[in-house]
Length: 125
Image (tube, rainbow, N blue to C red; front, side, top):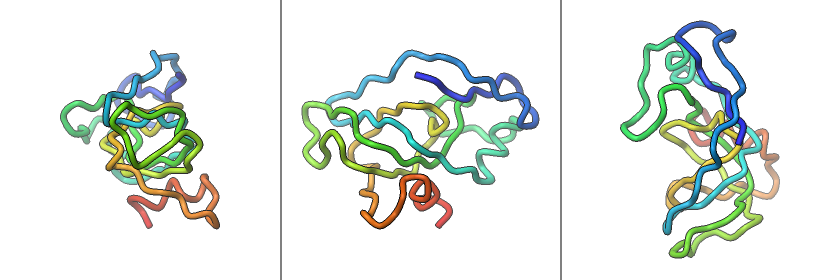
């Protein structure tokens, strides 16, 4: 997958697009193809090295919100199916092109909302 990685604390110029291994969804997780992310204060602070995400997240891969399309689901997932339009509030990782996330962290994107707009709903709206 492609991801916008923070190479060192600083301004927008510290982002570098890198190839990373695709995430793999666990039994209760959903693999989402990220279509859009949002930009908020915590993302700016993380880029500047002044904010750490929750334990288990990468400090160099920000992104607290996203929207996208479900690609696959873990064996115990019952709420989502491939092709579903989803949005989520994240601990980080929204600046990647794919994301594995627990099924309970996702929300459906209403049919009258574009994915690019839905990315800003979970946190900022």
